[in-house]
Length: 96
Image (cartoon, rainbow, N blue to C red; front, top):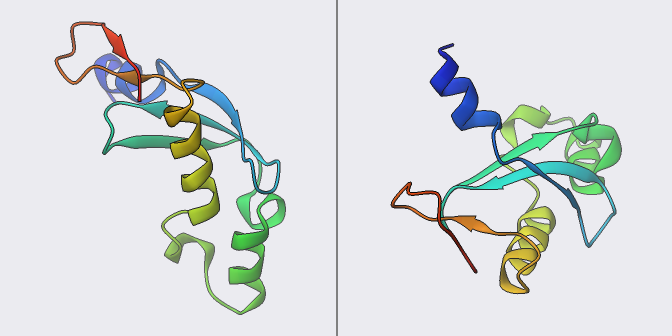
C-alpha cells in the first residue's frame, strides 16, 4: 500500500463509542456518504448485532456493518461531536 493510501485510510480516525452497546471503534467521515470504521476489538464478541449474526451461523464478514453503530455515528455527526471532512479536500471541516 502506498503512503498516500495509508494516510487516506488512517488519518483523521477518531474514537467513537456506540450509543447502543458501548463498543469502541475508530471512525473517519470523509463525506456524508462515506464512513471508514476500524474495529478495535473482535466485532463478533463486542457488538451484540455481530454476535447474533455469528450465533445464527453466519460469517461476520457477510454483515456490512451494524445498523445501530451506523445510527450512532450519524447521531454523532448530527450533534457535531464527529466532524465530516470537506469533500473538496481542502482541509476544511464542516458540520453534519
